[in-house]
Length: 263
Ligand code: HEM
Image (cartoon, rainbow, N blue to C red; front, side):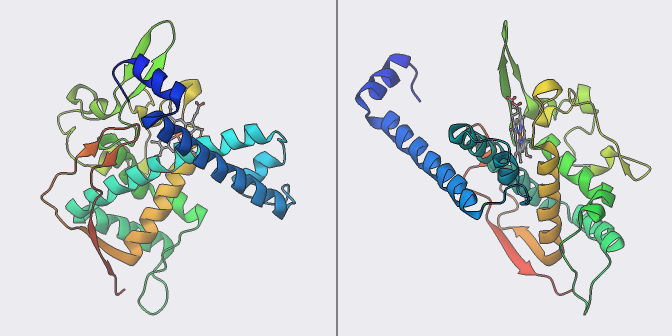
């Protein structure tokens, strides 16, 4: 990235420096997407396969279009989930009472399976019953939205600041900086907020297409890990700092210590 467009235009023209790196990186992502499409084509029978790519391939023949679909799902769906889960494990490490409440809820819904150890994979129906877990995921992304700001261009440009909005007293009340999953529950049931108050997935016609998938993915990974392992942030007193970028990434990662639970 440079301050003047002339610089990158010259680099692009001569295919040098960061423009060359960008071109190589795009080529690599393209060939990854292409090989995923080819592998799936060799498997055949798209109409009977249940994965997302097969469903698209059952209806679309244009390889360029399919490649764009693969790339947009990879970009939109990978780093966002990783970011949300990183923040979740940071917060759970600081709030053992929330972790305990997740375990209690999951034990109630899933039961504690054989020989003292918990089974860790929940069914879709079981996950729908876990209102507290759902609230924890929403509350995590209120304080740490995976996409911290987002710009839109129409007649004028506007910028939506998800990170700032999630921490505004005017919007969330005097306890806005506290991690309180209960704020999302009414009589134990998850109660959503208007997407324009909680714009983590944006709202309206350009709402995140993967929103429900994202929530399901985050819930199932979080649950499986919390039930099976005890995860502690290695340096609990160090506040994570974000690296600048489209998706919120913790600078240097979030080192944790993982221990298997006994039961
Ligand atoms: C916690 C995880 C996620 C968050 C916070 C998130 C957030 C967002 C946001 C804020 C937008 C709007 C961007 C814009 O219009 O400028 C968006 C768009 C989009 N997201 Fe997600 N996303 C997540 C996960 C996913 C997943 C898992 C997928 C798919 C597998 C996905 C697919 C998409 C697509 C295709 C769009 C473009 C929609 C359009 O322009 O019509 N997202 N997402």
